Image 1: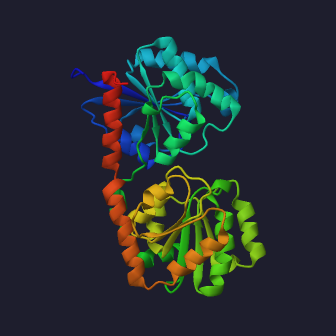
Image 2: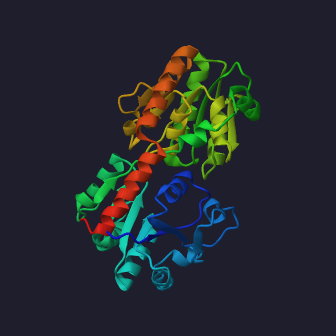
Image 3: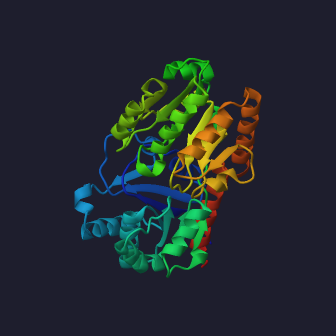
Amino acid sequence: MNDRKYRILHFRKEFEGNLPIFINIVKGIDNHRFDHIICYLGNNCGLSDTLADSAYEVLYLGFQKKSLRFFNPRVICRLVKILKEKNIDIIHCQKHKPTMYGTLAVLIFGGISVITHVHGLSRTRSAKRRFFNWIILRFVKRVIAVSDSVRNDIIKSNWNIDPAKVVTVKNCIDLGTIDSITTGRRDARLKLGIPEDEIVFGTVGRLVTTKGQTYLIEAFEAVMKKIPNSRLVIIGNGSLSKKLQTQVKKSGISSRVLFTGYRKDVLELLRGFDVFVLPSLAEGLSIALLEAMASRLPVIASNVGGIPEVFGNSHCGRLVPPNDSTALSAAMVEIGLLDNNHKKRLGEEGRKKIEKEFTADVMIRKIQDIYESVLKGDE
């Protein structure tokens, strides 16, 4: 490789807010070696964009969701124009549609390497998706999986893919952001309106079927019988919000369950939890779990997807079978009734695991190595 500066186009479906992982990648990759341009299929939704505010070039192709319901060749035309005008070397795609359109645009324009990033399990879930992948993945230089379980799923569900070009780069977090939080347990509980003498189990995530909150609510109903001063806090919103609140009401535990909705201050609210619970039915690699462990909370999580890779051999909490509210409630009671010193030791073990394997620096270095490898033409 020569010493010129290379240009990366980060191609995404839509602006989903200021995602810490994405911001860490763009800002962390050597800016003396690489320029970064961000491009979205959709429109500027008017939300504040940290990268745009930091003087990174951000482009919007302006396509509505309904215009992308079927194949839209206008996307390729606009994208080819950008690739040419911006002198792009690598297009780093997130999710299926950007990967499909990005690869087809590169096939027309030529001379650019395509990388795609896969964040979850069962992304090749239909015959149509398998067909498109059969066509486009042969032209993709690298497929980045956020966990080994996601990598194995990609290889298993795409029979023609070369396993050598599917690489694992685990999701990581910026410990500096977490350590900068000055909110303590008392202040966090004041924010939540929860007394200091309660044992708080908390979870963070979209309220959707795969996150398993319905099993958590079932489990908590049993936990209350063993720990009367317990409380469940559910942070997040989603399509199951009303259904889950109805479930809580019918169970007669409304006074002990708090739905906060979407919150921007999640890292602060974590300081008010005693135990973090992740009851997912499927999970690539949960950022919420990493943040809870980095915040020194004991954790209970489903033994699915990339979650066991996060736990490893560390004694930071308990893994339980998915779809099993009985096993989940037993683990919650066990951890919840531990004395504070024991909980603290579990939390410290989790923190050590994050510091060793899941810091942003580790992720950034691996992704930059992939960029360098692709540019050198390594297969």
